[in-house]
Length: 452
View (cartoon, rainbow, N blue to C red):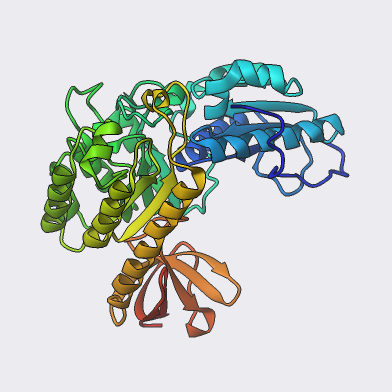
């Protein structure tokens, strides 16, 4: 599954011409928001040990490079391998002195990677930060628990509340890479939120392999609603967003807190994976199509106006044309506010690996494209209904002659954006603004500020 031949897409850092700076570390992050969080924690520890740290440095003069890898599906593994190989070549040229690899790919394939890419000085797993620091002759500083060097704009931060996963989904290799579910104590999370707020963070994006499992291991009950209340009370936090909720056993009291607290976004990211009971059972999701539909209806009934984001898989082993057509009709019926889809990746050591990967890659892609085409029309229709509305928008960045912002119904990187012409008035990145939606496209809203 791992091969040096996967270099046709490699990330190539530019040739270095400067002298390497001793004790400077360049951290390169691949994969999801959970990896971004881990890199930020690692960078804070390195900085506290007197290292100069940059994230994906543009100057390319660091003595040490640490690649934080993803090993989730084939495309992610390929990108991780090619990035490691690219930096291995830079090391051979003398443009890097030490190369270390950490993260999910390293956790899952360490023996193979050590054999195939000997240029890497050491590989570390997902929970081996203390060992990585020791290799760099640095100390793990326990007093820095909760401290991070943000790689995102300072006004929002990914906020990991637990690690690992206990779910038995047949397609997923995450438990192999991240281990069993482990909740972070509530007091530690609240303290971290206070520190972020004091530094100017206004939005917390709660992430985990499964948010809804929070607390079962350390408090013996689902405690996500209690955690939300305590985070909501932190002064300076204006938005709290929920990503990666699991549908089976969803704690409904979370919806009550969402209604009660103005700073908890009416937004829920819940990967549902498929729209047929037959496929859901094969995926070992612990839920049926009927129960899924009832859950969606209950959530929308209890939190009017909530934006639901989901993720699906096309081409799971045994998926027939009838299964796909049922899922397509279900997507059209459900009218999710936001939706993404992966093509199935056949992952060794998962339960589904024993099944025949019998849907051709081209057909997987064709089905995924059809789902996204249907979702594009849904998104366009929903966006047209936003025209004329006045909304609160968080300004993320400036691009050319426009400010780019988001509503409470949108997460960064993956969801809709609000585009505001700079000539309409001065806005500041990281601030909220009231805007009126003037026009809309499939995934973009165009607005003018109010009251400037």
